[in-house]
Structure formats: C-alpha cells, structure tokens
Length: 42
Image (cartoon, rainbow, N blue to C red):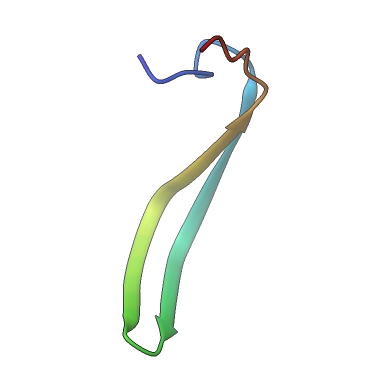
C-alpha cells in the first residue's frame, strides 16, 4: 500500500504533462500525482 492512500486526498490528472529543460525531457498523461496528509513514524 502507498502511504497516505488510505486517507482522503487529491489526485492530479493531466491531459498531458510535458517537461523539456536541457537534458531533462519527459511526458506523461493520466494520473500524475496524489496529495494527502500522512502520519510519519520512522
């Protein structure tokens, strides 16, 4: 299980996410991220 996914949160969904910055080049579409609170126990 991914930490935090058992809590309510917000997904980032993009039609297209594209980065072209010097040698860094990537593109992605669909669910790109997830934000939620979490309880860290190390």
